[in-house]
Length: 168
Image 1 (cartoon, rainbow, N blue to C red):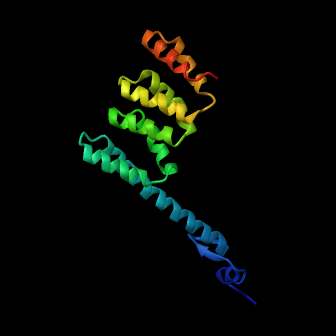
Image 2: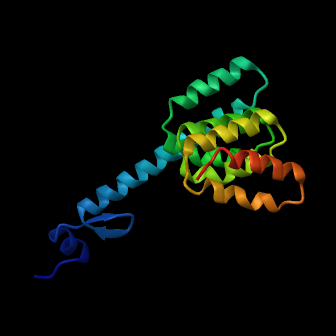
């Protein structure tokens, strides 16, 4: 008996989704992945919004932003926090350094080590050093060693003081 392609595929248990024939399980997986991507985008936008407010000079705004960000899972925030380490705002740099340390985000150790040596504000450098201590990345000393070769005596002194905290 003659059948159209559509009838044949349906008789085989396939469904058409986005112009392609696939099993119902593949379609459900694709829909779930789309749903997850959409959720990730919404959460990402939320993190960006509240992270921008951390930089406010108004204490109530910063406090609210910290509370809202605390409600969001760390895995959604780490990418944005890493990018914010180079912010021009001191409050933001200090906050993300502290948060990456609290979350023990191993991927943040190298940029935080740089911040611990080169940041212009003592509070941010101190928060960065504490974050490195909290993260306890095994290569922290290796991330700091290149700064010993810098021309800046200040950078070398800061690096040496950081290295004393990591006996390994």
